[in-house]
Image 1 (tube, rainbow, N blue to C red):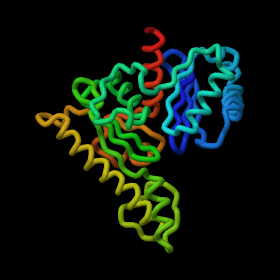
Image 2 (tube, rainbow, N blue to C red):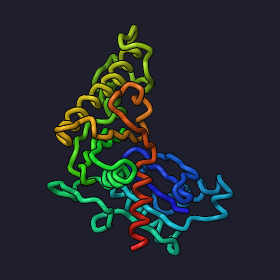
Image 3 (tube, helix red, strand yellow):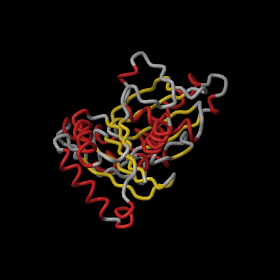
Image 4 (cartoon, one colour):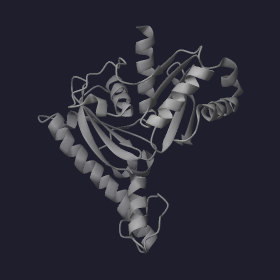
Length: 262
């Protein structure tokens, strides 16, 4: 079984693959001061919740991280506690199977490259991945399955936090879809602005990006949503063609298989 770990700025997502199937998954808070030993205890505690998984054990680890301090501790955890397990940490020099057409490829988060790998494998280009995480990432994939750039916007939770901090009379509200666009109270009005505002932003950026990716036929561009906050706005965004909650982790599995085979 392969353990795939995606360390994001807010959450760390862990998935156990049994072949191509997701056998188990967890989402935990990303803590930049958590040590390698603490990470190992947390991981073993999660695996112990599923005795069948614990008995079979992990025979491969694939990891990507956008948080350098956590990446360092994750690397140490793998070295100390899983030294006999084949492990792949995605960083510059790792073969991913996709070309990167970017001014400085080192600036790109490895999670965005993993999304590109998985989207190209599952759907082929041209495609756009919309990742609803700490930031909302729009990743453009050419017809030749190349990463050609994208757009970055403040994530949904960041926008809510900023609004509640800067406006004295506005509360931090639950992230939920309101029943109507015209809110009849402050909570409903905030939820409307958040949910429908993000939906409009996504549709606008995706349409513009699709027109650049495929000028002759923008409708040929496949749009894939992923990320922990995607379910909040999926029903409101009409340009989304597919929802793949484990897209980044699937990319990790594919890159692990490519490098282990090589």
